[in-house]
Length: 375
Image (cartoon, rainbow, N blue to C red; front, side, top):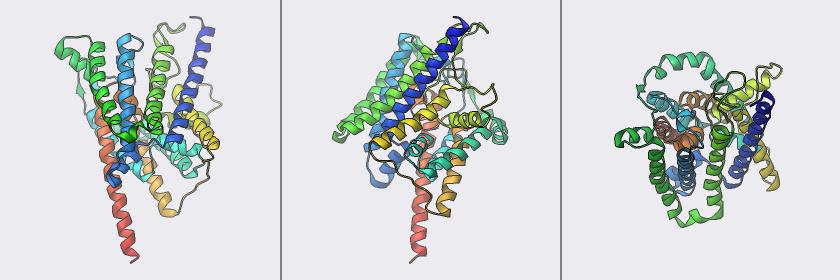
């Protein structure tokens, strides 16, 4: 491949990532898909509708990734979530912190991007603070603390810390086949559970789960297959084009938001280049804005008061620190990571749910305390 052809392919990968993220943003804006909202609906009202949307998205993404890996279209051991080190404590700690912050900030990073597209200025403040705290946890003060504490605790495996790798060793089969079987079993079970309720068959709910899963799978194919170059013309090494991690990536938003701020602030620095993550951040906002304007849902919204601002600021910091520590957000680990059947992703998602549940408990206590204070 020539340098000119490589540059053209890089541009195509970047624009394709932007368009996929636009679709994701439009779907979430139209359907109200939200991980934090799903947890809140179950905990507060006993309503499982949005949780079934999430289950449908995870199940389809899991099956789709299993098929991509089995067909050889993507190498699961060269993705962002594949590692021989099972960083269970980082996932547990970061996931819990992230889940709490998600509640305090009224939604996860992807939801904040969607809300910005709909005119929510609170979400814009959340994204800026989240990006700063995430960058500090990638390369700054909290990064030093992270690497010196929770990242030191890990379990080393001979193969990738993924369920398919463990199953392949246990049963003496190929990892790709083990991955496909597990994906069909676990993902198929999630899809069956999600569609078991009559309300799940409503077009909006099918669009939510199916649309989000389709966006994640498209991102996997773009980054892990289309953007994969077996031999870079300059380095002569295998390369995944336009990724910050140097590995195959799908939709995830904590670190990409940090890199987006970095790109905007140091735009004149020629070393700062666009990546699929940065393009995904811009794409979600653009897709959400287009859908909000088309459906006349665009509304300017600000903070209700000082207390509201304080909670969102604290939540944004927690999401930035927690998301980097857990190596992903409720979409990055919750759907993209889980679709690979990564053990770290499974721990991170469980911790996020627990953290969100604790945050909802705090919000309930705060409302009761406020009500009592005014009686």
